[in-house]
Image (cartoon, rainbow, N blue to C red):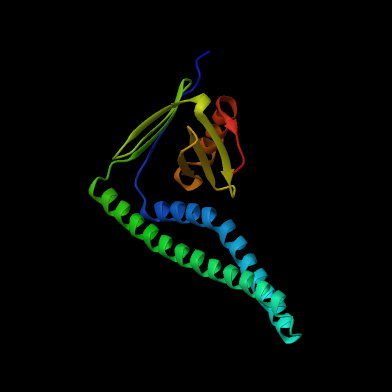
Length: 181
C-alpha cells in the first residue's frame, strides 16, 4: 500500500505571518517575563526587610538585605530593557520579512512524504528525515514542527482546511515524535 503524500501550497498572508511570529515571540518571552516580575516582587520585599532592619538599627543585616534588593531590582530593569529592545528588533525583522515576501511573492510549500518532511519558501528549501522531526499542537491552532532540534516551522490551522489539518496530524503521529514545548 502506498502512503499518501501531503503537499500544501500556502500563499503569502501578511496577517497570518504577523500572527504566527507574534505568538512565537510571546511564547518565548512570556515565562521569562513572569519569572522576572516575581524577582522584582522578591527584590521589593527584600528592600522592605532592609528598611525594617535599618529602623531597628541593625545596620549589618540592613546593608545585606539592601544589597540583595538593589541587585534584584537592577536585574529586573536590565532584563526589561533587554525585552523592550528585542521586541523593537523583532518588529523590524518582521517588517523586513513582509517586505521581502511582497517582493518575492512565491508560495510556501509544505510536503509530508513517507521518507521526509519538506519546506520551501522564497529564500530556502529544507528536507528532513522523520527521525529528526518532533511536533506539538499549540493552543489548538498551530502545528509546531521542530526539525533537527533547531529549526521551527509553524503551520496555522487557518492556512489549511480541518480535514487536511487532521490528516497532517495523523501523518506526524505515525512518522515523528510528539514533544511538549
